[in-house]
Amino acid sequence: MSDSVLTGRSVHRHLIPHFDLKSKNPIAKMLMTHIEKHNFQRNPYLNKMRYAGGVVNLGYSQKILPARTNRLRIEREQTLRETMKALVYCANYKLNSESLFEIKMSVKSLAKQINQLHVSEPTKKYRHGRDNYNPVLNALKDLAAAGLVMLQQNYCVKLKRYQSMRIFITPELFSSLGVNKKTIKKLIHSQHKHDVKSGYDVNKENKAQHLRALVSASIQENDSHALKALKARIKNEFNLPGDIKDIKKKLASLIKNQKSDNAQTEAPQKPQLSAEQQFNRLVVNLNVPVFSIFEIEERVREQHPALDKGSPPYYEAMIKLVKDFHQ
Image (cartoon, rainbow, N blue to C red):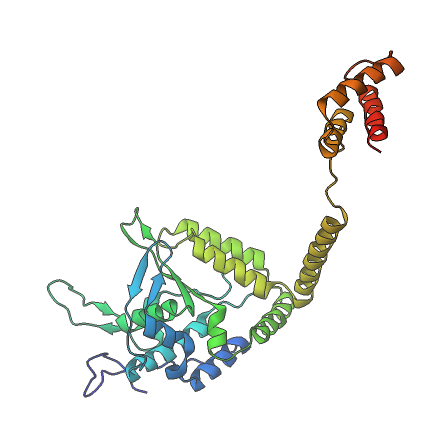
């Protein structure tokens, strides 16, 4: 397809979007095949976002998208399709990597890959022309508001400009294309075994990425809370092997059941009442009159002169006399 400017161009774009690169990665190849066949007019995530509007969370700022008609323009649908192809082509599928499902590419390079980078003619304000890739930015914002990707962009005080945007694929993108997450997980673990045999070291790659971020101030290093939550979710759903995950669930359920059984068997024991408390309760229950209590005290002094008044044996003797008196 030609890269030239459209003849009889639509008012919504300058160039026809197309992505012609072929991937050798089995995961990207499978996803690109599903994207090619996918009907974006019936995508539930995009339809819900367009009907009710959405919020684009950029990590430390937000952008609200208004509600629109569910009917996609052909130009927007083509841009979404080609942008999604480029995203799955450039995504990282390395197991245990800190950048799993991250697209290590700037939005400008992404737009250039799908033939959406338009350079305007030089003007007084822009001597060398202006790079325009708004269709790709709008497509990314639509995907982010629908929950299919996550964007993060910080403002650098040192450079006095925004840092490069980070883009992550979310597991909802696989569901929207009709791909089971278990299939993706199986392919990721299968590829990891091949990479380990080839001498791939994930710790070395994570260290190199961290050092690269420290050297360049334009690269974002700090993750927002939403991005940390997404990384933890991806790690839990894709990094852990299936058998280990099942064992963890079984152990958690066993511990929970054991705690509930112990709580039922070990009923809380009532504290034992003292002899004085038992006597007072017995007097109230039997409705013993006051003059009877005085008579019982006199008998206890006569029968047990050695007992100290107020001691437990003293009250035990009074309890015995009260029971005998009211039989």
